[in-house]
Amino acid sequence: MSSQSSSQSTLVSANSLEIGYKDRHKVHSIAKNINFEVQTGELVAIIGVNGSGKSTLLKSLSGQLNTLKGKININQTSLSQIDHKELGTLLSLVLTNEPVSKQLSVLEMVALGRHPYTNWLGHLTTQDHKIIENALVQVDLFQKKDKICDALSDGQFQKVLIARALAQDTPLILMDEPTTHLDMFHKVYVLKLLKSIIKNSSKSILFASHEINLALQLCDKIILINHEKVECGTPSELVSKGAFNTLFPEDYITFDEDSRTFRMKVEKD
Image 1 (tube, helix red, strand yellow):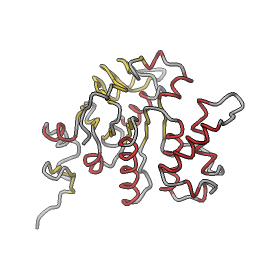
Image 2 (cartoon, one colour):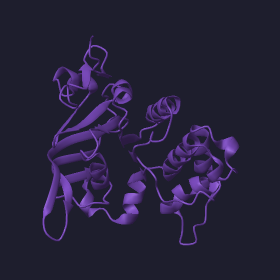
Image 3 (tube, one colour):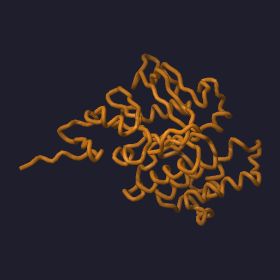
Image 4 (cartoon, helix red, strand yellow):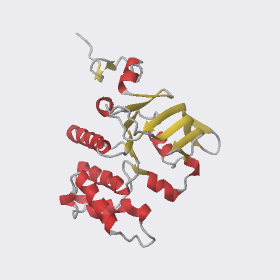
């Protein structure tokens, strides 16, 4: 794990946050009393069972969904005080099953990341092109820059979306289930790629994931949503508190603290 250093600062924080949604008749609270900080240069996973609120928390952090209570700060500024254009320079968002045109080339897709910085004609400067090329190099896609996205594998397309976020050049990257539809090799590859990105930059990456075993091995912090309760800490801190022991029904899945892995419970004959 990366150690805290004097160069780190709080990039995003949540204080007494309550997330959920409202309809015409009532307020639906999903999780409350959420408090955490993400420092620059940290890889942080949001984990929890299906329907626990992982995506809702991400959408709240990105400003897509209004919070029910509490406060979110990005770079010491309240999210509610940041306009849409400025927000595009502070955070980039990679969503699962995003409705994007796969008829674009890899280069064209990644170039969309420069939208917050271009003029109304979308003109790319020499500096923009350098940033785009660097993003493609970082995810090892430069040789495929002219290929149509529709011809890519799921793993390759996920790398394109990561490259687009890198081209947006924001200090914070939010990702929803970046390893969905990928086989085990590409799940590990993508998460190690994210770890490499933060290691070689001052960016922070916050992602929702079902890959709990991998997150425990690779992440600096975990935000755990468990039965409407939210805890945040390093993997070691959460393991020592027994935070993972009640995440799944113990009749089916158990958590081994020594190996930091979840295992299917097998009945002995």
